Length: 153
Picture 1 (tube, rainbow, N blue to C red):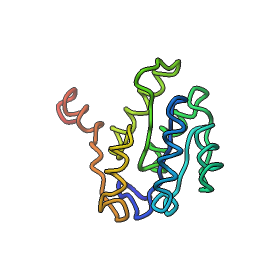
Picture 2 (picture 1 turned 90 degrees about the vertical axis):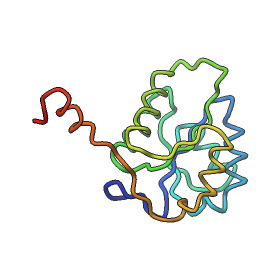
Picture 3 (picture 1 turned 90 degrees about the horizontal axis):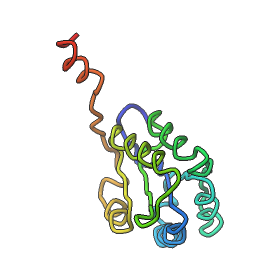
Picture 4 (picture 1 turned 30 degrees about the vertical axis):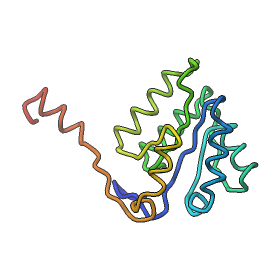
């Protein structure tokens, strides 16, 4: 990926909280024809389970609570992840909630598509943009801050 352009093949991060891992695995199985044409990565056990249960190659990062969320956030900032499917558990407090919030903030900051449930993931994967190039609209926050605080310098 170069700059703000998403290529035809997407680099997709797959993340799931413990109570949602099986849901994500089932969803990936049902979409393996599309996902098999993409580059996949994921946090710890989630990546391992998806790979074992689907046969798809999934680059594995650390477990979310052990730094995997930050690793994926860094990949987003470096242009190495340009799409994220994150099946999170809305009913269970997570010990690494601040990490999750930081990951979602980075995803918004770098204007990448994010699905946090199956319906959204289905809509994103069925989009005509899924297998075409796309120019993201990354806001230049540095310029905005300079203008607001320093009068444009």
